[in-house]
Length: 227
Image 1 (cartoon, rainbow, N blue to C red):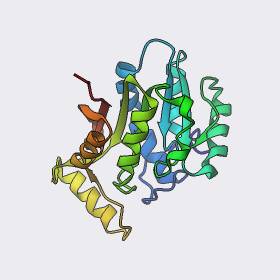
Image 2 (image 1 turned 135 degrees about the horizontal axis):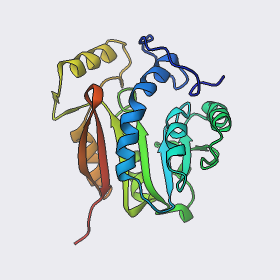
Image 3 (image 1 turned 135 degrees about the vertical axis):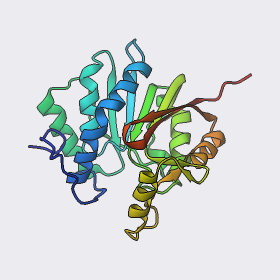
Image 4 (image 1 turned 90 degrees about the vertical axis):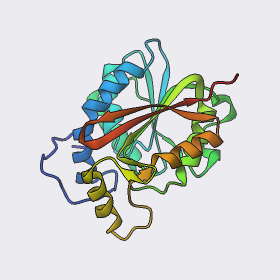
């Protein structure tokens, strides 16, 4: 059975950021229901397209899609090696409102679809990427969102963060220290201030900060209103 449709062990596996790892599956099974609650409030009621960045195994998009039959979901990832798993999970679960995954690398604008795709998505979401990705991809993410989102669309970024150098909880500080101790330069919680800076550079702004279980946050970005 493909990863993303299997039963998840409740005991925390060893830390491993690979999208098909047991750790990522375990973490995803813990956060998907609270994120679904946010999406129920934020996603449009009319037929629209929704893009997931860094879809990984496809566990989240395949969990969310059946709850929004009127929406068309587009998975994407920079690593094409995960595409077969996304397709398998989609097929196993019979989700016919999920498109075939596409290659999208936030460091390569040429992969952000073609010029005709401008303003073609009502929403974009990205889950648990910044604790193991360099903050530099925030610039690409905001530029990508500026290009692909409709004027009233939103970008949801979910995960643990700190704010202006301050951790919201001791557990988040400990998680940051655990990640940092792995010896990988980009691992660690990122500062929301840096995301906001990248957003400002590309006509986006932080609209809402939603506190989530396990000391995580859903950050809702939208296009800056023009006066």
